[in-house]
Length: 121
Image (cartoon, rainbow, N blue to C red; front, side, top):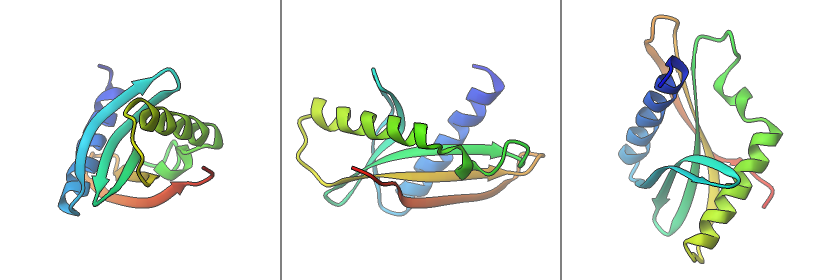
C-alpha cells in the first residue's frame, strides 16, 4: 500500500470507530462491485447506511468534503443500489460522508459525520 492508501485505511478505521460509538453496526468494509467501492456499510436500527470516508492531511488538496464530487456521488448511488440488489434487501437506506481531517503533523483535527450527504435516489 502506498502512503495515500494507508492514510485512507486509517481514516476508515477512525470513521468506523466513530460510528460504532454512536451505536451503528459496521456490516462490511470496502465493498466492491462493477460500479466502484463503498468504504463502509453500516446499520442504525433498521436503516442501512453507505458511508464514504474522505481523509485529508492538511488543506493542500482542499477539505475532505470537496472530494465528494457529482461524479463520485453518482458512483456511490450505483454501488449502494447494487449492494441492495445483490443482498436482496428491502430496507430504507442512505449515503453519508465522514470527513476526517488531520494537520500536517498527523494530529486528528476532526471526524465529522454528515448524514444524507448524497441525495437523488
